[in-house]
Length: 357
Image (cartoon, rainbow, N blue to C red; front, side, top):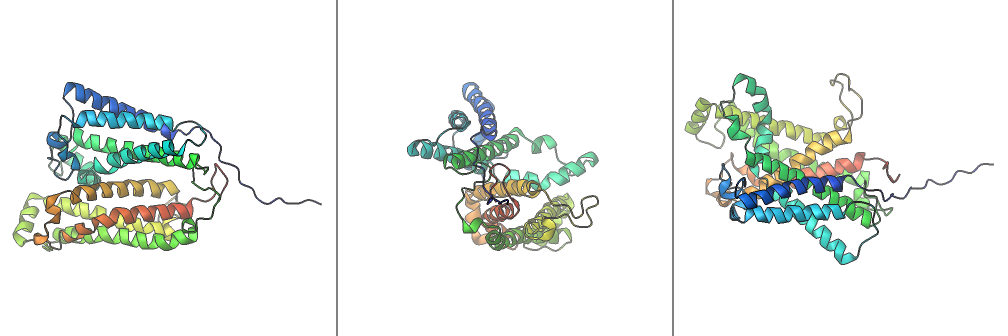
């Protein structure tokens, strides 16, 4: 007679994580560049040196002679912290673990949310128009004025922040006895179950989809000649300059984003629909939805923080249908991040590393 053993879970092995060394290399490289800026006094792209002015960025409060050495210390320190998170290691002392995680999370937040601003979100929205229209000379802009060193540095900071946050998350899991890959520790966390995630994820997804849709309504209304929230004369000026079509493109991007956000709680967000030739019926890779949604959630959160730091944002005297949707942006990034995480929880399945799930 044969017996069938109950399924067991493989313990999470203590093998080295590739994310922490990658974060250390990226942060170390930019830390050295910041050190060069501090020594030479050239190349610092933020604050008063920002060609766009940087009014919607908290770095405007940092003097340009303080910024480079400050970034050098933060980035090189974060690189060392990321290196300390590499390799299998026993659980460190609680004070050391707390201090290392606090520093890593703080620097990750500064890089991913504080350094970028609304310019990153704007360029993501205009990217389709700029790429498609470039061969035809439209929109009539100097691309050297659009893709600046300051913009590149913002994207680099966002990448560094995300890498450091991922490394810190995995190290926290590993030192807490959980699986570094999925975070499961064998305990029952009800709110992370697929059924629970489906409930609160639906609320988050509809919230995250409604906010950009409201923003898109005004921009698309201008494109068809309806001065929603603005004066007719201003609309005529935008139509003459062609700016209204750029706004329509941004509104269209927001509307597409709203539809894709709903895909996080729809069946076609899990399996490709019939009209996707060659892919119909196949499962949608989890990363195909999670990675871009996470990027947009971070960009929206960064843009929101920049707007909240702008005095004009709090001037409600000129509030109109054109500007009111932007007041909801603080909820947009949070809701999109929550909806994305819920989608991940519903679809992640069994972990290949620890076998749980």
